[in-house]
Length: 226
Image (cartoon, rainbow, N blue to C red; front, top):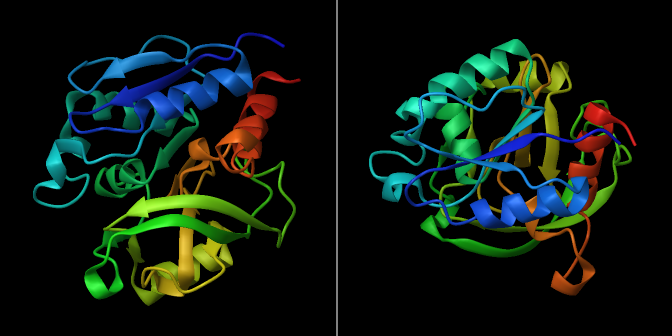
């Protein structure tokens, strides 16, 4: 396998960046590069970019709103537009919507409650770089930890996402008020995935489960081969 070259972006308030870096290294065998939000440029020749969970800038204004205006995000947007795969998890998903790389918005959870537990997800799309290692309709279990994970988009946008097969994951239970129980969505080109559940927390049996591991395995295989 050729070397997998990934980068994990850290914002002030990120708290899952080390988890994300550890997951990428365990699956690919190569430690990802660490990128600070204030950097103006990304490292050259990246295969994969990850925006981790946390509370960037303390979630002031709206979750992810300030982070989406960080200097590094101009480079992330440019890379995504060139086709570089970008994964945004939890706060990273919020940043992706605020940066315009994914449609919709993440609102406060229904009943205004923080949700932190393992949840069942149904795999809706298996044709993307991120999901090819799953089975269509398969139910997997991945942890969540969010207060602002209620996915919202207007009806026309939701219909377009459904019609284009861009709903990657759906909650298999009513969790946080998300429209149509959407847990993760893909960009139009399919190279950007935003999801509220944390696959990087489900890559080792000793930590409670391995259902998130296949997401990273799928990306690594798809980008550099086995």
